[in-house]
Image (tube, rainbow, N blue to C red):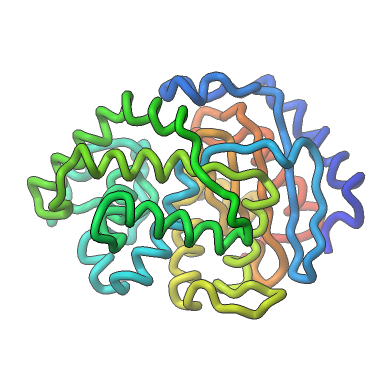
Length: 309
């Protein structure tokens, strides 16, 4: 068991916190630019119900790109693997997460993977429901169940801020609509996607969800299989290959666990068959990952031999 106490975890966090001065908060979504770059917190959730934490772990952050993993799990459960991957590919990309380049040059013209914005939009489009609100409610209820927290909701300010600035995502949707990947009203759909990204939770919730993925979709205490094993494994594979933006390869070498980051500074980690990790540190590196959060994971992995490779 890594870290025998919260004090030990706090010492690791404080060492990592020295790196926050080298990062900066996301500025392309106005609501995220308000975050304090010096904030840092971490929680580790164990299968026996114990949780170690350091920092202000009750501070809420919006899920942003971490929601892509959770939407993928629900879409796979709704539509099945064959249908989902007829619309979205499996392969990592060296391009920025919001790039349109590969959509234009790939044949057939579909997103390379579910973790880039185009792929995430295509995946969310596949979530079942008679209306945008029903689809959002189904996703929110699913996330609440994963975290074991029925109080999880979304931040209206973040959703509104994202909706006002989602011009590139709109462009991606219209391009995919032209090629038959998306077949619904784009404006209504963007409303769904921006609310998805604005779902908020704290590090304790993130760690709990990471724990479920660490145990192949099962809640260790209750033994309930929330996500089918095959779906959880697909999600974890994408977390390894694409979960840390363009730094996923380096992260696999230095840390070696399935993880997904987001531009609000969150990281959700799943150490297979051991525990889940939730981190928040708003200061980002030049790849869009929490600069101090990555350092925490590097130190934990090195000190406690966490790599799955």
